[in-house]
Length: 109
Image (cartoon, rainbow, N blue to C red; front, side):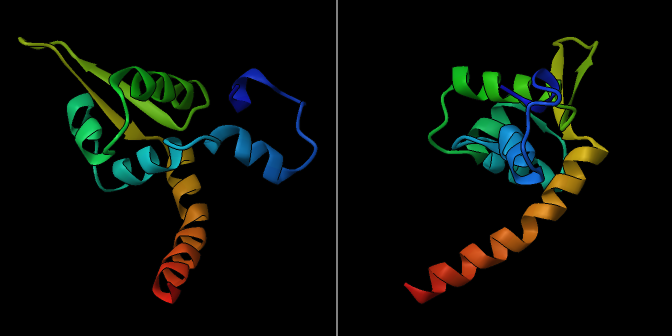
């Protein structure tokens, strides 16, 4: 369950952050959205291995937590774009040192 669904249920800041980014796919979705807004199909290609069902569920949770913005364009054919909110951008900034740590670990292999 996301942060928006569990107010006051966290014992520390790391617990609250993990509540938002926990799971295999959310951090990869955030990374994919860092460069630019994406349509669903683009995201699916950028996050190899994720199923449509899981991607849709993860995007709904991130949207509910205020991390991702979903914009529906009233066009023919209609389309939807996902982007990071300012809170999502700040989360990616916070995750950057973790990514650097991971890259260093990969180089040590």
